[in-house]
Image (cartoon, rainbow, N blue to C red; front, side, top):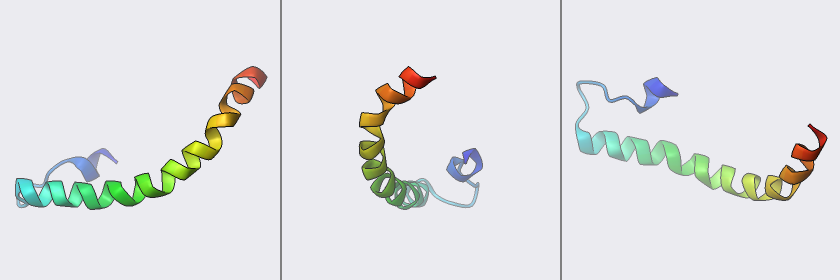
Length: 49
């Protein structure tokens, strides 16, 4: 994950930012509803552990 975020010497700063946005946006789009679904269960999860 860290290597994906680090810039290769060949790519420019703008290209890196664009690549970072394209890699992060699909993740947040899929993780946001999942996080909202898991949010009510977190107190229950902490209570059981």
